[in-house]
Image (cartoon, rainbow, N blue to C red; front, side, top):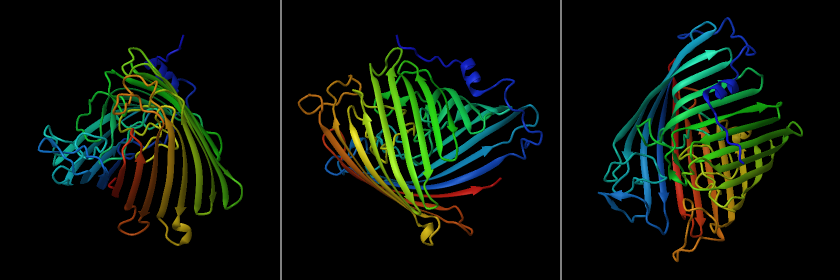
Length: 447
């Protein structure tokens, strides 16, 4: 019999470290006003996806377009307020956000429709809206070294991570706990009952997964921690339960081991197990997927090789548009997570500060996957060919290039400019596409 986690509120509280063993709060802790921060992030976002030989999932006056492009240009104002805590053994505070997304241009039939493009929300006729907003907040309580948040939250961990790869970030609604009582150890736990996609103003949406689609799940609960063993080694252990869908478990480690002043050895390992749970809203599955990385950093140069393998019969799934897939070969477009798929990736990073250009960096990577096989996939993840047979022996590759520059001084300090390009080619189970993203961000600290 499989033992399934039941993350009740009492369990979450215990995991987060409430109790007499927690360290006492410092007498000189900042107050509600003194500890407050108010910031505004300006984000200018251009996204072009060329679907090559296939039609784009775009809409024009409610009719599908065959122009082969998804394209959008938009601007966001992301305002966040984080108060300090009132002084005393129990401190209270509040976090709040106000976000505005503005359409600058999408053109007729180029806005991406309802697809993974997800830059701007669309109306019923498939046209991109001129603007949309997100308004929300959370109350927070600090007791010793534990912080409880209730409301709209942005968890970041291997099993639940609010995504921030589009115009506005994703958010969740529920409660979270974080404890830092033990030096080097950060414990997290939470129970969430709703999510908000990057293109939605609704903060109470039902859960959806990237590959299985919408699911009738009342909540997701998670718990775990990250531990920094020393200056060179860290480990993570997490688990989650998406009610009536899956139990998911994660273990990972990261190593940066100096061999000399200029040379360091890099390594890492990530492992997930996902099993169906309860009413099996996405069918029966039991997936193991893992990735391993080894590399070298020499001065400004970093070169790494990673291998990834899905041993399950179904796609390894995760919450839609979230970043909760801590696998080395999950990159700009491809996740290399299809059933039985094995993939390799080579990545090179260059920090040009060593060559007199601080703030400028370059990244390029190439990943190739093979042996994807849907022969034993369940009905929710099954992919078939034109004859109705399960797809087998599927292959794909992706090449990414990214150039980023962050202004180091002056009035434009911290202004970040990023250019990202991706090219993917695949057999029948995936898209052939070329993609360009231009992202300009300018953070302003008001308080």
